[in-house]
Length: 104
Image 1 (cartoon, one colour):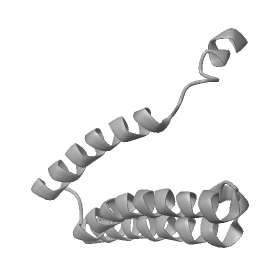
Image 2 (spheres, rainbow, N blue to C red):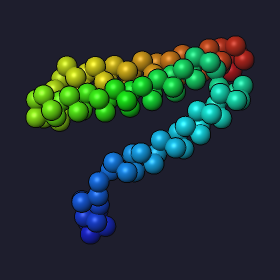
Image 3 (cartoon, rainbow, N blue to C red):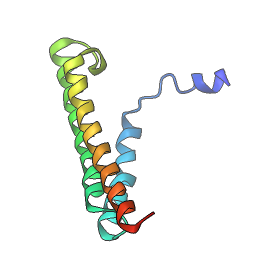
Image 4 (cartoon, rainbow, N blue to C red):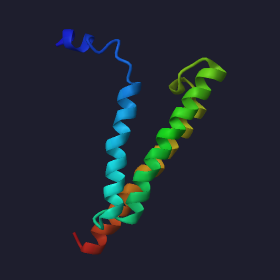
């Protein structure tokens, strides 16, 4: 098993990250077209993209200005994570409202 994990040591995750955006954009397109996902939750899913963009920007700022990774700069890391918490909260609130409306 260790041998298999070592195959991924030199793998640059950047291209995989970019490729993962395409299925997510398809999901957002589908979610907008369907009435199955509450509007509040849909905004939460959209804000997840904002979280990704902000994380990228703040990672660059951390590296250029401080010479460190984003996770090493608490203020920047916390700011990025705040967007994730906001998006997750909206997703939960939207579905909680849906369950409350349907009585489930």
